[in-house]
Length: 252
Image 1: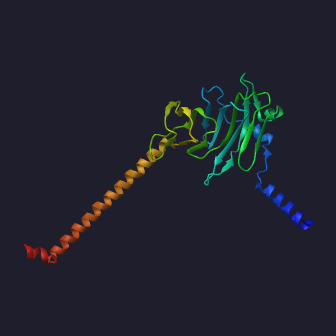
Image 2: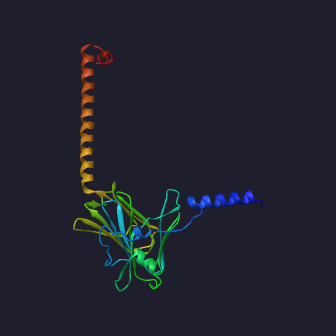
Image 3: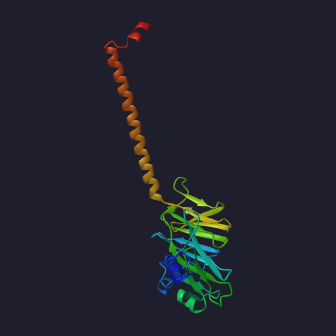
């Protein structure tokens, strides 16, 4: 292989790496890892996974760990994995001690990301135990995430959000229970083994807006039908007055 060809291959490889096409892995910066969550994490929740969906379209997740690392991702429209962005990463030891993301890294853990996944590795002294918490992005009026950890789940929606109206709300998997606490809907599963958890929700006022639009549409449609029938009747009377309904008169 001549030098020019070799140099070309090297340049192409560097280009692919810088573009992320070869799956180069990088460490998530400390300023993102150590950022403060909008609200305290639900460390004391009695479930394996606790998710709080926020008003700003983000969510806070707390995962009970039974392994030395967790892989975080989403699936795009083609079913391929894309890395789940994480901020405000925290690790809690079983004794309640909480580490920031940079402290986790200083103790032998890490938070890395490539073009497919984000991986959170526990501190070397964690012994596959404790809890991992992070903040990430969601979609307005819809929370959807793969099941990274099987077990009991709880998803808490922002105030005044509901899921019961079929057109606007949906929850998967089935077998869940709901409870409203301080105007926030709590959705719980005893044991999630499905591939993902999906919650589509709506503001309660959306139903009133929808009902108002539906009523106005019905009234307008009804008025149009009445007007149309009156026009037909008026045309029929005019034809009779002009003697145009000859066939009807002949039959009589």
